[in-house]
Length: 103
Image 1 (cartoon, rainbow, N blue to C red):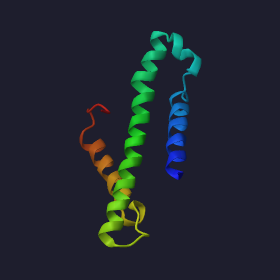
Image 2 (tube, rainbow, N blue to C red):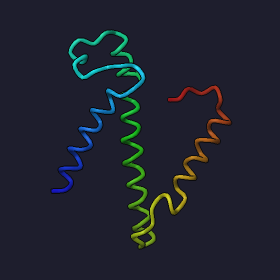
Image 3 (spheres, rainbow, N blue to C red):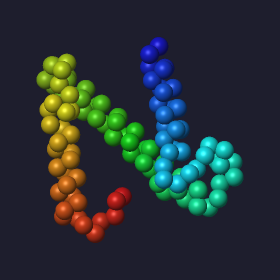
C-alpha cells in the first residue's frame, strides 16, 4: 500500500520537475509547443529528469547490496564511501577529458 503512494509521488514530482527551470514552460504549453520550448524540454529537462531518476535508483540498489553483503541494516552508500568515490571519479574524468561533451 505504501509503495503505491511512493509511485504516485514520483510521477507527480517528476511532472513538476519538467516544468521548473530558467525558461518558463507551463503545462498548458504542451498542447502548442514552440520550437524553442520543445528544444528545451527534449534537450534539457527530460534528460535531467531521467538522469536524476537513474541516479536515485542506482544509489538505492547500491545501498541494498551493501546491506546484504555486510549484514548490517545501518550501512548506506554515504557511510561506506560510495558517494565520495563517485565524486572522485567525476572529478578525475573532468580533469582528464576536458574536451569531452557532457554526454
